[in-house]
Length: 170
Image (tube, rainbow, N blue to C red; front, side, top):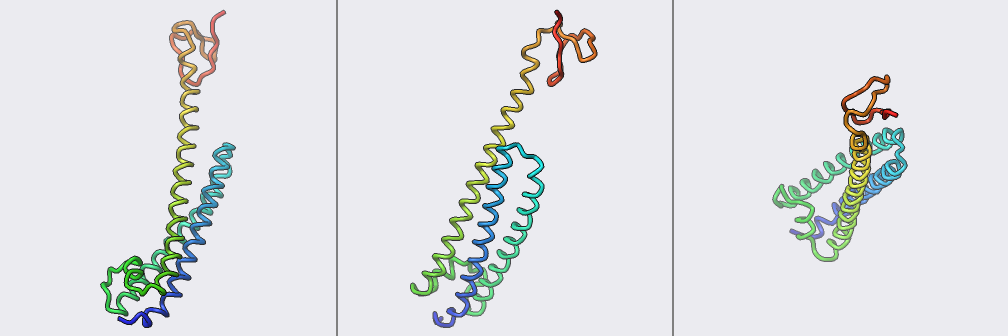
């Protein structure tokens, strides 16, 4: 197979990877917006952020399908295994032609890894907040002496239900 015959398709694949990287950058921005909303407990901001994220994820899915189809087309066009991946294309290219494609692919992969790491940070932040809330919600039962509480209506109660305002006798 001649490297020259692959050359015209390489710029198309590079442009596609650039578009995927730009979409991943947009996804990263939504993840960072989400973190700010989580920190501020700004619940009303989650819906618009999730709407933006959904658009970006749909775009990424379409770009991934386009990339897979392009790689499959290149593979079939040049008598390669139709299941060849982008890694396989990079491996069959001569060094000068593969460098640009490899650099773009590596850059794309690095931002994907960054997005995953930032999402994990958001999950950890949410879990931390959830833990604090769980502790706060269960604290009421621990401080009320059994049989010495009154419910919100002023009636004597044998036990306290978590998260209810209680009035102690006296």
